[in-house]
Image 1 (cartoon, rainbow, N blue to C red):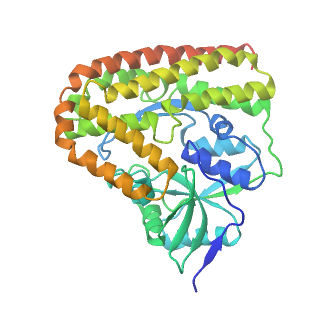
Image 2: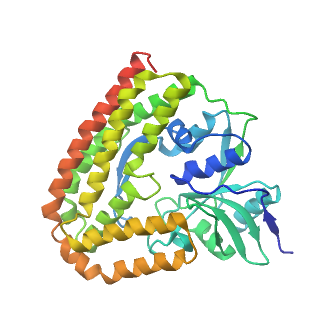
Image 3: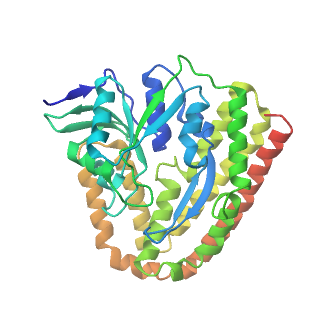
Length: 387
């Protein structure tokens, strides 16, 4: 028997960060108004991590905070609760999905973006913690209806979704994960929860468990980036520069490594609970956002035509992916082909990285000072009980 379930009146699309946009849609579908920025900030907001293991094609430079309990904390601080179910069984994972859709509930799931054709990423760009909403399935027509960060809905085949959910690529395979959200009748966001989330952010930046995280992580990144040509020779260095730009500007960060999102969260919190002590912090994170974008630009600098062209193509890919107009997948694939065909020329320019990475390092060191000032302002406001 073929199943056909489409959640009634689901018309919520678009978003900045995959986790917060997916969860926000479920809230809004149930009549609970909340901004994506509010969820983001409640989860712990901004942070920093520099992460690399040998199985990865390039180091990860992450700007989100909250750690691995990010979305759990965001949900809890609204008065809701969350359980994430996981399994190694594709059959069980698909059954969970069907059960939720049969109950007319949109399903929030994890999957590997490399196996989702509408994402248009290269086949080796595996990331198993991409989150989105499935709001319908038609087994007879072999269609799964998805709401992702795009401004309109997208579809995949059932076998494509199963493959994406079953991916075993490290370091974070999806394990057929599906969210079980228990929502309150009305939101219960208190000043206490705002304060708790802000202290979470402060702690993550100032007291990281390892030196790859927080302010110490930014310092480490500054030291390592000039060593990238030796650490990641040839095409590996191209991957590090390419992925670095994506991690900062277009990889579901809302641009500038989440800093504008966090500034808007602080603004919203300030307006809700009259917290004028946050004004200086907001200004400082807006300044940090500008520097983050400068760093991203200097990873693929204007002075090198093929690197500049690569940056333009990445931004074009992001625009196409967010719009998802007819023919989007084909256009995304064409951009991947252009990047691949330019690889030899790109690598010639990448060989000049020792000339431009020291400039990037200077921007990162400047970023460190601004981020340090921002978190100190946030800490002082907290200690003075003005937030």
